[in-house]
Length: 125
Image 1: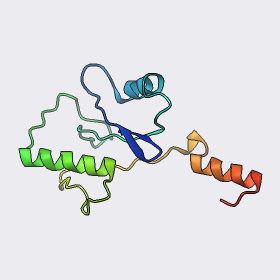
Image 2 (image 1 turned 90 degrees about the vertical axis):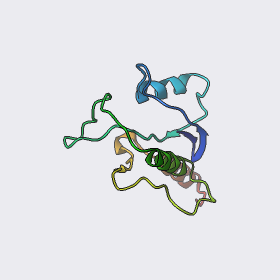
Image 3 (image 1 turned 120 degrees about the vertical axis):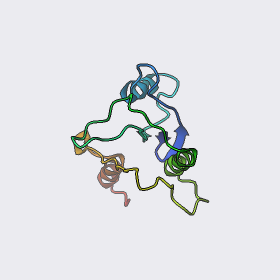
Image 4 (image 1 turned 45 degrees about the vertical axis):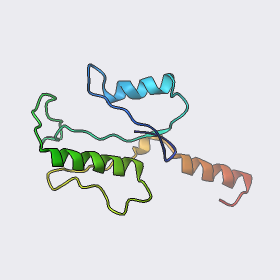
């Protein structure tokens, strides 16, 4: 999911062929979506193993249809955050959710830079 700030602008997939998440993100930074997004989120289907590695791509997944439908709905709700949805997504007890944490080595956030610019200009933010 690609976002312009917090507005969803594009949804796609990786995993078919040789594309990885990283190669798709690089592609979208230089082609038709270049400059139109600045954030992303992703949802994976591979298990995280005890050593924090991902399970093999070929691990068989054969969930029941109702579970697949609940997961697709949950992913869409979490990605788009539609204002009329009162419930969160139903991932079920067998799904582990991981929250992405921004790496501080990336430097200041957009918000931190805006606050600094306003401070330098004497503008109350």
